[in-house]
Length: 184
Image 1 (cartoon, rainbow, N blue to C red):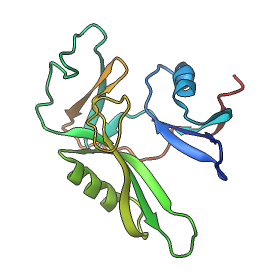
Image 2: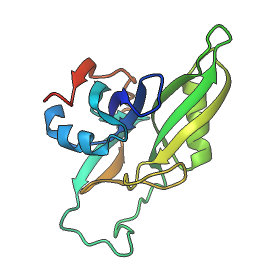
Image 3: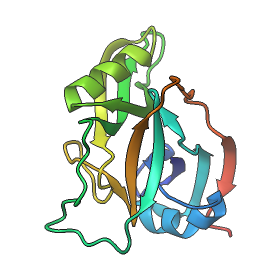
């Protein structure tokens, strides 16, 4: 999971977006990140990234499906535990600040409603009027919107494996800073 920053025409403040990419190292993802940026190329940069290994007690596995055939955009293998990996972006307000606060991350849930409630219970402690700004189920991470089910990143299928020992990763980045993508 990578947080990109940059500018867009007519914007008065820097904008940010989240992208899901696969690579052995972050440098392997630079071309795809550049292709997926919606704004002005000049100044495009990475603010942070995290390799996702565990979420809510589930191990996150990526399985290469390049050679598998998909029938009508549906996977041949179904998710038997009825749980999906969801990306949720929660918004909320702090009365002492002009800007809306945001916190985002991944949760494992059976439905959009459950995913939203888990996220609201975990994030933006102390904020008022918490609400879902963005949500996608990571099944088919291509042109996702707020209601599309997503289970694929490029040629990689996401599999959830429940671990015997509950493992929960924090939402802290593996790296943060300012890595320009327009200059390399």
